Image (cartoon, rainbow, N blue to C red):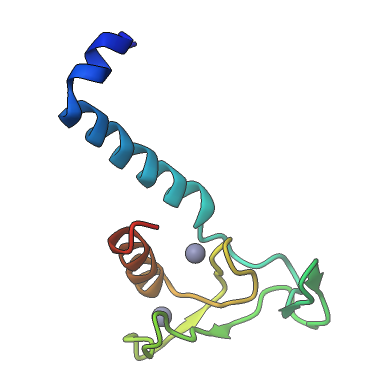
Length: 104
Ligand SMILES: [Zn+2]
Ligand SMILES: [Zn+2]
């Protein structure tokens, strides 16, 4: 633990701490789990589970207004900030990078 005096006197340290916190927040708010079984949509409050198959293959919609760069852009994953917004791993990284550049 750092003392308050040290924090107050060291702008560098404070900035580093802030960056660390931002990263942590990003990581917590933007996880990339697979959709639950049978889920094929989100009704703003909960999953819609109308799918016959347990696991769906969703088309990645891309991020930041850009198309998904993957040629085989199927995914089961979504970002926890936007359920049912299907996102492949490559796009999720882009998503995080953009958010970080925007300062969240
Ligand atoms: Zn997100
Ligand atoms: Zn993608």
